[in-house]
Amino acid sequence: MRDRQKRAACLAALTAVINRSDLPLTPATQAHLQATAQQLANGGKVSALAADLFPYLLREKAHLADDPDFNALFTLVQTQASHWRRGLLYPVPDPHKSQF
Image 1 (cartoon, rainbow, N blue to C red):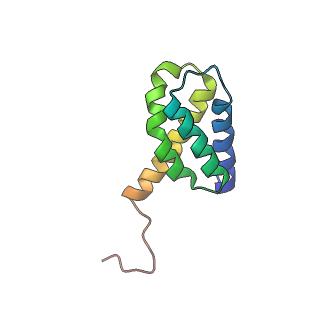
Image 2 (spheres, rainbow, N blue to C red):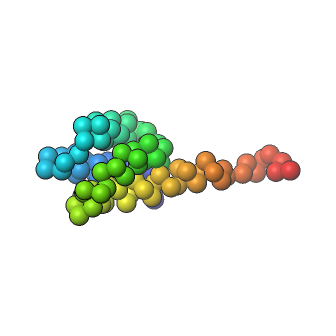
């Protein structure tokens, strides 16, 4: 998925959860969701923002596991966060530098 498509998908999933007033999210998670949506709208890196948001969603997962909007956001954030972590653990080698 291209960055623009990833950003649009994440923003749509975030907006779906933010606009649901019936979800019992903690105030900290609500604030973090709104801040992440703002950063995405301003061109923030999807995988880094997802890695930052993931712990907040993980805390909410236990009591929101049956909600389809939350599950869609959780799955998307989990996938993008793993891409970000993988990039930190296994950086892409620079072909212009010696690997030895």
